[in-house]
Picture: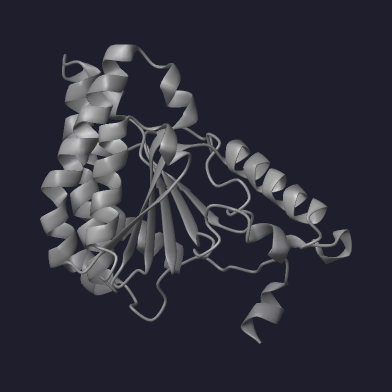
Length: 247
């Protein structure tokens, strides 16, 4: 609670994005298999989600499964999909209790049919909630998203709905999966890796980046508050000088 009380509630990021990394290494350190790490990472998802909602953060995006993750061993993929279904089922009550709306970005139609059905069911059930928006990035990659957006834009140009002269940053952004979601103010990556890993490349152009050595299953409520406190001590200039920002 001490960390929570130190946070300036008038200077919160609107959107926090997280690359949840380190489940496998956490499990290996304990002599367990990778799935043990993924299962323990679910508790971190719960704590961080509830902490963000308690603070009043409006959007939280979690990188849950990338398109590259389909290349992992089949047993691990199957276990991850099973864990996703069970987590969606068990956490629906928590989402409703905290007035959280679930959303998803990515090529979600490529998910197994039972996962796709459960995901859509929870999205529908929470659609009237008007608290925080929790966005799961599933079967997601930023390059896929950008190419997909370009294809849709070209199709509209061919149909005469859009002219080449109209194309700019703002218009292109409307073709992205995140068209209804503001860009992240801060991107967090756990586990000590210094990579973006094909996540929200367009959207994080001016995001603050925060890297921590903490493995995801150990990244809990207080770790999240530490991140927000760090964010509040930064100066976001967006290409301006410090003097301009202060004035």
